[in-house]
Amino acid sequence: MASRVDLHLHTTVSDGALRPEELVRAASIAGIQVMAVTDHDSVDGIEDAQRAASDLPIQVIPGIEVSAGLDGDDIHILGYFLDPDDRVLRETLSRLQEGRVTQARSMVERLADLGWPLVWDRVMAIAQGGSVGRPHIARALIERGYVGSVNEAFSRFLRRGGPGYVEGQKLLPEEAISLIREAGGVPSLAHPIIVGASDYRLDLDRLLPAMVEGGLEGIEAYYKGYTPEITASLLALASRYRLVPTGGSDFHGGGVVADAELGAVEVPSETVDRLRDRRRRPGCTPDMAR
Image (spheres, rainbow, N blue to C red):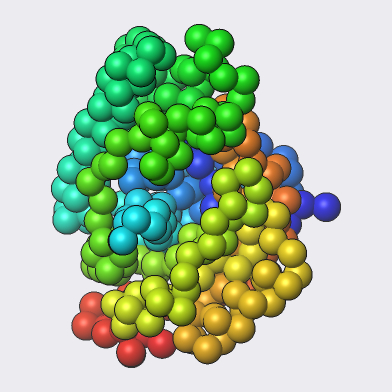
């Protein structure tokens, strides 16, 4: 039985396979009652998703997944209940999108230099006008027969430090957190642990204190592949730092990223109420929001 709450979902606006309205319909059919659209570095799918939900028994929370980095770590910050029309948010996301295109083009050029040429226009076509990134390059590599899967594309070429990887310009984690908070949203650390072909574990003892000091309000404790032990360890950290445990399937639709099914990760319904209570109000400081 699908979870009634899924707070980590992607559309064609970033690297998902379903358009926002298609994702909403699919989520509703799956029995999800509350969902969040959290596209990478973009809020452009939120309006269409909420419009599609207006005639369905499902709530769409406006969200985002902002790419950040520090000391070689990829750190993603989810944002919930933000204002997608916030001017500073929009301007910053526009700059990030330009950076993503520059990074992706540089990676395609590097792959060509290595003897694995791709057609840039095809990479952009795979992205369908969304936030172009490594998953779209991976799909282009598959189409050309260079690799057999997205996982192989990342492990052979596109992983950080791999022969086809080019570092992109990213916000610092505290900058991403501030961006979300200033847009009225609630920031949560996404997938601090990844279980699978691209296993990694952030050094939370080192990273969390500064992020909490900067206004982090949540941590993703319910996620695909998490064992009860992993979830328990993250719930303990959430309690220690007074963070809301968030979660979701990180569903992409299988278009360019392998993932769990819609609602496959059980997320407590009270998570939504706790996030809603943390929404930033004018004049509210991080300590007041707690």
